[in-house]
Structures are given as structure tokens and as C-alpha cells.
Image (tube, rainbow, N blue to C red):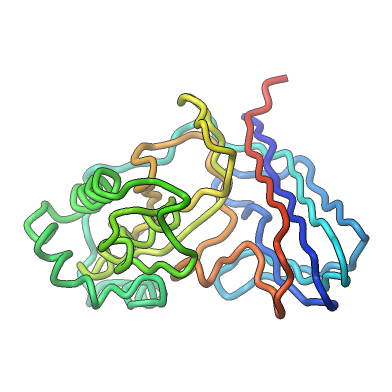
Length: 268
């Protein structure tokens, strides 16, 4: 199927300010770009690179004053829901591939060592493997209240566990931290998630955050916020937590004046 995705940011900068931008989907897992383009006002030069996690990044310098950055793409994506394998098993730490080990360690937003006792108390007796990870997702989905005013951009998984409130980023951080505390490699991911085959959400469209978990030799998508397999998911970036994959990281203090995100199925 085809989906149109994109975003637009409005900024006001007092001085020229350099920024790194991550909003372009990774073209993998059956995702193909049929058309994509940037429209920036005023026009600014942009360069492209791929970071250490394989994410596509752009570098640009915002001009003083008001500016807007707009990315728009028409994608071809799978019409199947997120893959699942209910019999996928956990991999013991001595058998984990080297590249997965970084995703077993604590990170800024996922201080798993601080949640280890809680993780083992809540989930230590759950059947290992896919069912244990799904139990974690069930718990986070049921226990954490979704709300934009109930969290802070600086909230860690520990804060979310205490407040029982947050947005999709916070749901994912808490689930990632629980998995890591149980020696299951888990990484944070975010991207575009259209409302396909579900009721349209009343909130304005936003970027979606979820996690990827290493089981049985492969990485699998789990979504603690929605807690269901979804259609049309388009990954932008993955990393240890949201600190690695900020939509825009600026080398200065420009004011974000507006942000719009879209992700819609194209049926014509």
C-alpha cells in the first residue's frame, strides 16, 4: 500500500543555528520511497549522512529570524501488520551477538539498573521469550496513562514508573528499561504510524515511539502505547533511547514555534 508521511517545523532563531534533523524514513523492511522532497523557507543548504545506528540524518544551519523546514514523502509499505512470532525465545547473554550488547545496558532515559528489582518482581516469573515481552507491554499499556500534559521531555523510565503517565516515548522507554533489566536486548524506535484499520485518534497526528526487542536471533517490533500489531509503520530511526534519535538537535536555542506531522494511507 501507499502512505504519505511528513512533517513541518517552524523555528525562530536569534542567530544562525546549526541543527541535525532526523525525519526521513529508513528504506528497509519493505519500505520504498516513491517520491520525497524538502521545502524550506528560506532556502537553506542541507547535507546528508548516516549515523552510527544506520539512521538517515540531515545537517542544516537555520538562518536568523523565522524559518520553516518541511519534509514530505510518498512511501510504498507492506500491507501486512507488524510481524510476530509467539514462540520466539530469549537468547542467553553469553550467546547474544556482539552488536546487541549495547542494547542491554542502561542509558540516559532507560536507567534499567534502577528498575531491576521492580522488573524481576513484576515479570521474573513470566514465561521467557515473546510472552514475557508481551506481558511487559501489557503492563505498561494498562498501567501508564497517556497524556501530553502529564510528562516532561526530561522524564526517564524511572519517572514514568513513578508517575504512571506519559506519551508514547515514555511508554517505550519504560518497556525498554524493563526488558534490559531482564537481560533482553531492547532499543528505542520512532517513526510514522498512520491510523489504518483502527479508529482515527482524536489527537493531532504526531510521531510515534515504540521499541524493538531481540528474540531468537532477530529484532521484533513491540508497541507498548498501542499494544497491537499495526499496519503501515514507517521507521525513521532507532537507538539506545530518544536521546540518540531526536527529530531535531540544535547547537543553540532556537524557539520551536510550530510542528505538524502527517501519516495517511493513499487510496487513490
